[in-house]
Length: 119
Image (cartoon, rainbow, N blue to C red; front, top):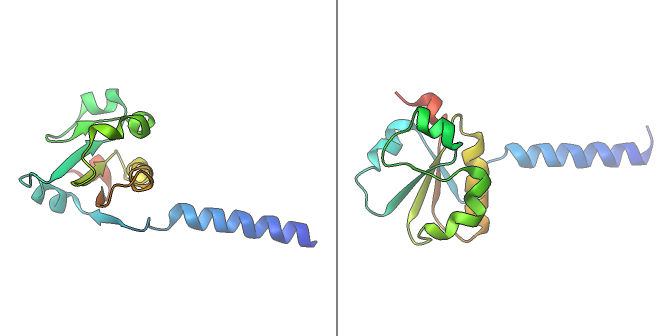
């Protein structure tokens, strides 16, 4: 194998590793731990699923801001408060967490397993 093929393999491997590593500064909580935060007035709850998914099944106090709209609508959120994000499985909410961290949100928490883990 030539040097160019090795470089391409290394770049692809690095990209894949980066996609699946935890995001620095993003906490992970279980569904019961997320529920424990419901009474905290310093926490914002965001559901990043599509409006259709949200309408079919959602939990209060989660507010629906679809992932595709989050970057433009993040000004609706308070950067000084914790943001708990949820989706169906936890993948989109991790992307949402990354977006929020890049926009300067300090405390971002992802619900592991998403709505699929809700009991």
